[in-house]
Image 1 (tube, rainbow, N blue to C red):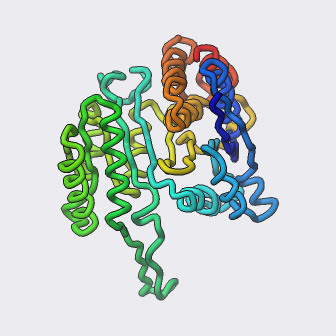
Image 2 (cartoon, rainbow, N blue to C red):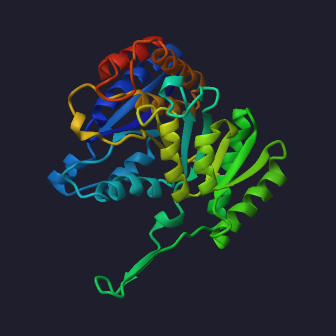
Image 3 (cartoon, rainbow, N blue to C red):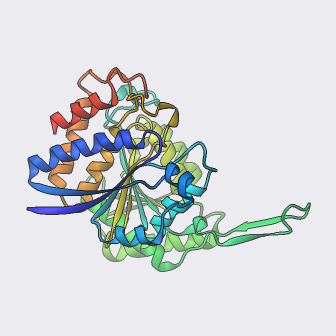
Length: 353
């Protein structure tokens, strides 16, 4: 029997609640499909930081390297200044573990959840591959004459060919594996960001021409992409983009798939340890009320299994989510308006796996 070691970080706010339901579904999957998950729980997050001043110690990174994957509930505490936990936990883990891909499936489960007129689940089904360790988020830049009328701040979109190439190549592989429209759309702003943009455009074309002749190549400027997400999301199959643009467009993508209640993502190192999480925040105002939607966390759990190679189990979780959302029992995806509690939604999906 295959077994996997999973680091679990419930985190802040409603994070532990949605994590509980995701693990419930994972337990159902491992029983049915004959593999074993061994969980190690960590308390990193706002409460620990307020108590100890510690975010994510180097020793934890070393422990994570020995795991097969990391499952994260949510990070964000109202009593902690913005940026401390995000940089000290999320970004530190991404960079230290070289999780160079942010993978965001965008799938609409029910027509009524989409804010776009006349769009159905057949119209909203694509994947965004976001480069996750380069670009502006590396923090290259600085400030001079801070606090004076002449203050200047810089932050540089910095990319090397190896960083771009490994991301683009991963996106081509995702496109080939999906085997749907077999089209990879590069999203950038090469008409203005002529240096960094040109590197992405050339890499996209050269890798595609050489190694993926079966995949159609496409390009959007990022501003045009946001327009087409709203007007014609059915155009897309797989999108590859740099870090900042990917961060922005995946929030828009989450809304057209029904909101953060169903949106999940993975921070992927294809050769190492990856981290999976729901895209919604910690939602502290709902903490302990058992009303938060756990579907996004359950979807993240399915993504984790898919990445670990348990693809049959991952497909079963996705099918169970689809069945649960179309059962008529879940009235809304919004917290407090689902018609079921957090626990009941988890039970419904777990029973269908």
